[in-house]
Image 1 (cartoon, rainbow, N blue to C red):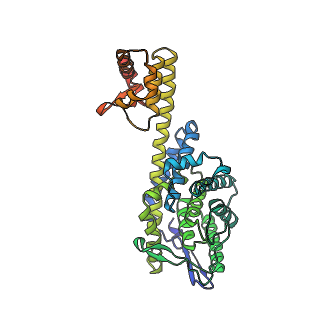
Image 2: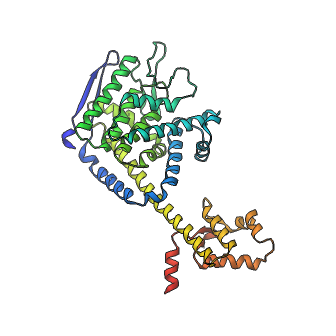
Image 3: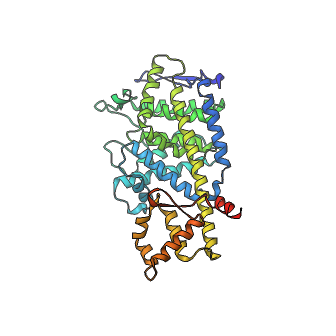
Length: 394
């Protein structure tokens, strides 16, 4: 990447003054991170994604929308976000639920668009994403897909003193349009120069937020744009999962927009390095987390299959099958006392003795299907069957 280090585009606006788009990235400082992300991407793509694609996508979309929505002040929990995603869009009346479904619509729009081999980031795409994100949401000034043009009586500012200070983006609509068009042209130049998407995507995100072209929804749209560039280059799931990383690191995320901008204003060398490295660190975390999750989901699928096989072969009875299934579906370790109070569990043993209850649990434990942890907490023996069967044959 060194030959691209100084590539820039300086634009003279009518009222905002000069605005410079530049790579501004120290290649040596991000080289290791680039290699790690590329390696993680290869390992993730080689994992058995097809076996768990539907469930993985559902989880990623929910946690991503929760993350990107929470960054912008959304109030729904992650569980409530998933519930909103399951609603019929025509029945939604709550604004918070509408925000969630709008983001899902934007994700779907982006995923369809970037699937075309000749897709390029352009203004109609950005307008359509913004329209999807902000449609049917109340706002005094915002119109879905319409660029901002401030009247003299209204000043747009972003940021706060806790995250590097306030920033005043361009106010005049002509400057906003000029800079957005220039950003798209600059990105195309980077693409023609074969600058890696792992550099281009965060920089487009970074400069888009500086332009802040719409009245509302800029953060959400900027993160969808970043994800879209990555999706088009073959990254799966991780581009949207990145939103959760930004939420988890929200203070640093907000601060870097200001510290990198101020470094550029002072003429510092490579002022965008920290933002790109921050992005790469997050993508590595996202990829590794997803890789672990795929492995876990595959283990669960294998466990479910093995459980059904043992039941069909009468190695476990219907009660044991029900218990193991319920323990597997629990969100965490299930206390034995809680299990024994559960109505479904009591229903299994209405005519049976405590000795039968103990024998059923002991049988599950001996086959490694249920594991007893500290304080009599039960968890499913996912991943433990192979080791248990191997020991049994010795």
